[in-house]
Length: 173
Image (cartoon, rainbow, N blue to C red; front, top):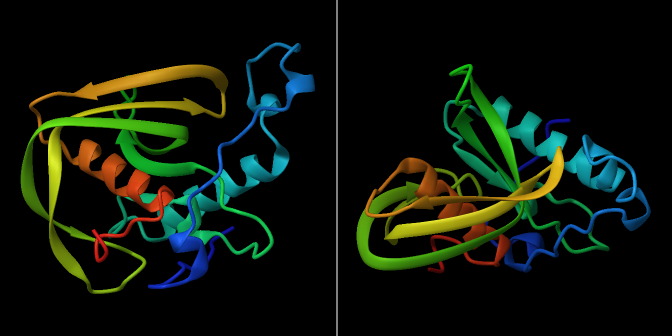
């Protein structure tokens, strides 16, 4: 379901997102599908993908707290980003569950925008060396991707979305 984007100083934007915990009773079963994750997380990820797709021409990524509308709980630690599938070359929205990012090396400045604040762009300094680990809905395996000395758009998008999950925005950075 397409959701509204939380704007500017909406409380979910300033909250630090909570980790996604697999259903422990499901881990004994074969880990081949979304059955290990809570149903509300699976639905929330679909909402993230639907919302991002509805704005695909101006959206490269979307963090959980940007569309979180449950005032009684903290947003999940998850975001989606637009990537090109390695085999099919199709552009898809991939979920990054429990992402952790490590940054090092020189920083470069580049312009970023944010859906949480329309028509706002700012030059932001980002590290050139980025390593990100995450999980997906289809497995509990931990994936790692390293971007070293390579200022790629996906590295910047992942950094931007993890900032959101940590309660940081480009206008407070």
